[in-house]
Image 1 (cartoon, rainbow, N blue to C red):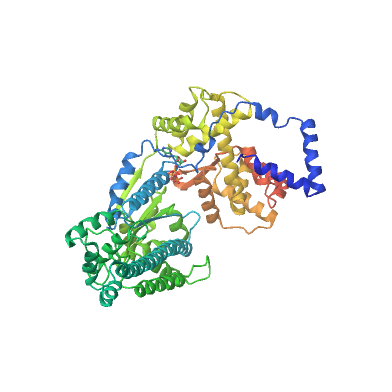
Image 2 (cartoon, protein in one colour; image 1 turned 120 degrees about the horizontal axis):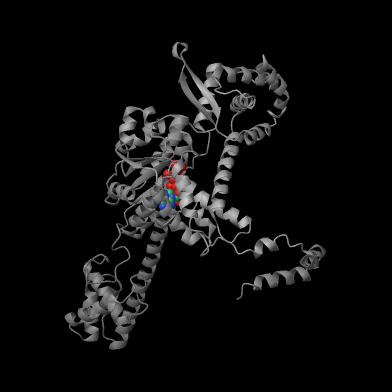
Length: 594
Ligand SMILES: Nc1ncnc2c1ncn2[C@@H]1O[C@H](COP(=O)(O)OP(=O)(O)OP(=O)(O)O)[C@@H](O)[C@H]1O
């Protein structure tokens, strides 16, 4: 069938349906074709620069991670314990943003899961981004629900397997019965002298059956066993009787009968009783187990995203993890955000779980770009979590070049990059702090800018423009999402700078800030709190605040703006609460003049 078929059918159906709306839409289409202004034509006609832009996006997980083999190997050496059924040490991964921590950890966990499947060792890896899931309740609820889901899926698989066993058992018994009947018929056919007792015995599991068969075929018991074993080996165990002769079937039954109670134990005999390699003795046992599993499945109650007491959530999570024998690796990315937002209770609970778990074992991988976050941890949590530490150093320009070259082969059309583009992107990102994400962003943005300007190749100019654009986008985003109080503090600094004040100090900022608050009826924070907000702006890279000593007058902060003043002011004024503040300009000016 061609791809076009459904479309053709679709439009036919529309016509015959006599829907005036659709018909006129179709004719409008034709009209548009003629009257099109070519808005998109020009853009489409330019040879696109990208072959596959997606590989430059942060969401893309690369198959190779150049310059991270040491860290990846170290993680693998620690986590291999999980594949041996042991508990791997907890790992803390540190490194600045964009140094490949998440990508490497995800790569290793993917390998771990696939190897565990290959060797049928139960091992689960769960990834949680604590920037999004930042409270103990949410972390535990998310983990609980993931494990409940996994448990349910495993239970369903098991039930399916047990139901298949029951079906096999039905078939097996039906086949056995048919053979016994055939046996009875044949006994009659042969010479009509077999006594009733013998043919009855062949229906059941009596050990005389074999002798009966041997008599029927006039073969010695030894010859009989030899030929039947070979034939049985070719038979599928779940479908007895499909490809075998009646004699072979009888032979198989004979063997089973000799093994006692219908369950085969002889290794040489491949047609097994469906329960032979199971822990079950009877159909009833299997049914009981299915009912038990169904009860288990129904007993799992998903945790709502709010509303339960945390200890209940923990207990559901605990039971869900311990339901099966397995090693569980919990990966907490941006773990510092979790500690910052809600303390170290979650980590405390997770790290002491192993002493209480009966079936499973838990190991934690924490990922952080804040090297100091462990200072806020309870010493017990700190030592348990940091059993192994792996540091991801920033990439240097050469390493970033390698990373970009790997990606650009797939991302761009041949010849789309001029020679200096990758080195420049790498150099810019290395200057920043060796951030591969930034380098990839730069390359992608440079490509987009080149595409937009209908250029056939990306050149140095595009990279520089991309650098400015990314920086501005970042500032705009950071400023736009600041809380109102921080916006007011920042606006105070902007007004001071605009009025030519250099070496701005906290007192000056506070005075203007106070005035601005009054203008828009906002609460006025204390000077100490305003000092904290200035430090936060400094950390975000929006202002630069250096502490300078003023001799016997003590120390003070000198503040200056680190971002483009006009664009930042424009973003602040786009906030509806702050937009009136423009009017206070004369007032601010007046304060400087006296
Ligand atoms: N060695 C590498 N090879 C290829 N791509 C890499 C490498 N290191 C990082 N990257 C890419 O850089 C981007 C950022 O990497 P990643 O998310 O792993 O950084 P991170 O250290 O976890 O940063 P953050 O702390 O900000 O989360 C991703 O797109 C990733 O694919």
